[in-house]
Length: 377
Image 1 (spheres, rainbow, N blue to C red):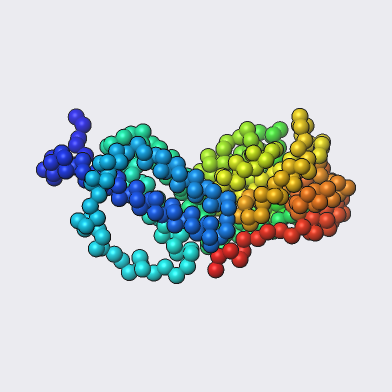
Image 2: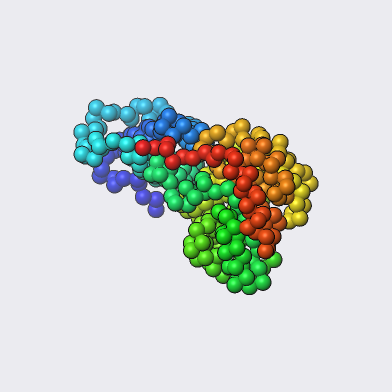
């Protein structure tokens, strides 16, 4: 037998319905206000167009979901004058001295309000409740990233911002060989190393990922796993890189968490804009030139790099690495397109890592990297 939403003795059916609508109305307003406060911080304090876009999109989708509620009932149930909660406050509510504190409070308020909307929404409209649930998950991701930036970002985030040279390696013939390869690359000046190998089984990939994660800490490099968010999370890697055919960034974020780095391959400017609207931390742009690692039907080349440069003035836009066939003899074209970061494979051959890396970095350092370190006081 279905139980009523409230005990029978509490109120009449009409009052029960009105109470539910008051709860939905109050929490809809609370969530909308919280989203707006965070959006204004991203827009005016951080000058972060990508994060502003994410919050604006979330706010608009939230407003669309609210259209499922009977607006007239919500307005009729609103009675701020008789709300006993308006006279209840805590000392901490009045203590806001930084943007970080404002964002933290707004994030908590928004997430709690969405949970109330989801639970009480089930009584009124199950579809509405389901939409709010999905928005709540999106809110967790965006709020976590915004708070992280306001707090100064994680060590991983700062290192990613400063990275110029990114190298890809396979699992090698043995764990020892892979670690030696990592040591050589780190000594040559590589900032990020990605493990990419589709020819080994999951167990081997996992054990290499764990070994690489441990070595990366000692070497001072970031360690990224290609495609496999599950292995990245389980191995303690710094992050994961996915392509356009793998899991969407939002789902990857749920697996690896807010503090992990997510990279995304992009092959045209539309994919770049989609990446900016996501919680991806960096993008690989290309392929720029034909290479020996992968074959493509088309090469967007430096034209794509110039387009990306035009939209990457925001320091909180995903960090962009040029990728595909880049070697010391053609990196000048990448630099001319405004890129100071590259991801390479064949350019850093075993035994000549230091010389090749030195030649690449000498040109890449002519491009000034944007930084978010001074955005929040």
